[in-house]
Image 1 (spheres, one colour):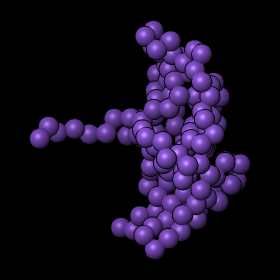
Image 2 (cartoon, rainbow, N blue to C red):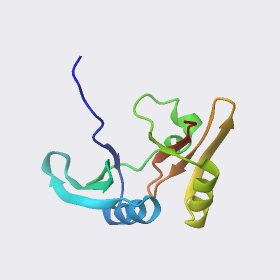
Image 3 (cartoon, rainbow, N blue to C red):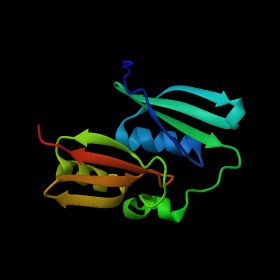
Length: 134
């Protein structure tokens, strides 16, 4: 089987500068590079935080995120990519930090099978954070 590693996730946003600011201020990502993708008519930025990369697209004439894609249970009813998930050491501490930054917390799970939460970025895209025991 071919060997590979994860490179990046990506989301479409209505305002690239606002999204760069949000991902930097809230999650600590910094711009690695900005570029134009002619075929997609997209102003694009690759963000980086340590080994993690996140690509943001501001596409000319893009449709807004449908309301049903903004909530995890209803989003699962549509085929396609759902979200990216990151591991956190302490979910409660993470939620406290997100609250202090006025982040839109979409959904919190505290179940026997695990703990986690979904937040919405400035465009409504879902991002999951999971507390996983060692």
